[in-house]
Image (cartoon, rainbow, N blue to C red; front, side, top):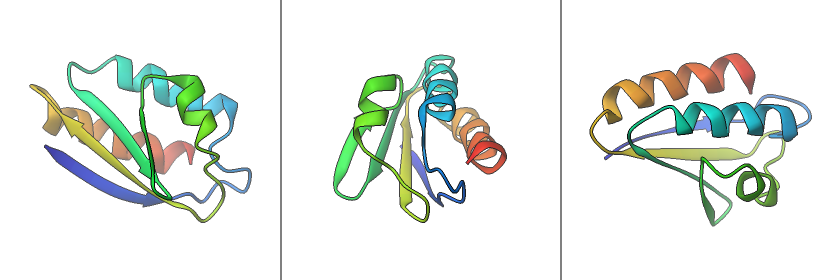
Length: 85
């Protein structure tokens, strides 16, 4: 299991467009990807689950990746967060 934390810098927060891109990126891995924020957790492949978390500007999220390609997947997801959120 590998994880990283990231503080949301997008002024709108984790809204529909980046949440959809995040779900797609998580589905492209062979590992299970979980996102945690403010005491809530969700499977990162579920767009509605991500949206229901209500992640806002300044919130700190923890992304946990567990599976056969976790090291590659966590690098890919860290880059995704830095470029999109």
